[in-house]
Length: 157
Image (cartoon, rainbow, N blue to C red; front, side):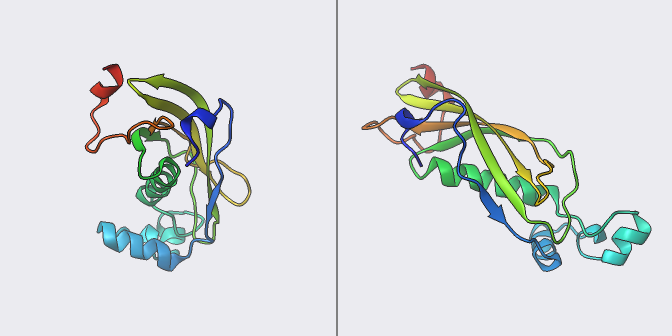
């Protein structure tokens, strides 16, 4: 995590690439989530029954990757306060997905730094399939860590 004071609007976060995602990866996630829909592991079913181009990466896995990306960036002293995503495209087995982020706002509040970001997941062709936004709370240099559990009221103190 970079120090809040060193951040600037428009700054890009270091990307995180995962993949290529295999059918085994997708199936293990689906099993852990108890999502037994065959479009996440059965290629013939996905293509023939649902007329899809292949086995689909689940939306919950894509959300997980983006939250992991944000929490890794925020570090142990920071807090991912808000995050929202849209599913605008399919990701398939064989795709390599890259999480990206860009700072859109930064302001000190209540003794902490509040950072807003645009983020998303792009496939290896650069196609955006999961755009989103997030708000992350970071400690100031020499300041206290964001408390756990996080209470947004501290930002107005």
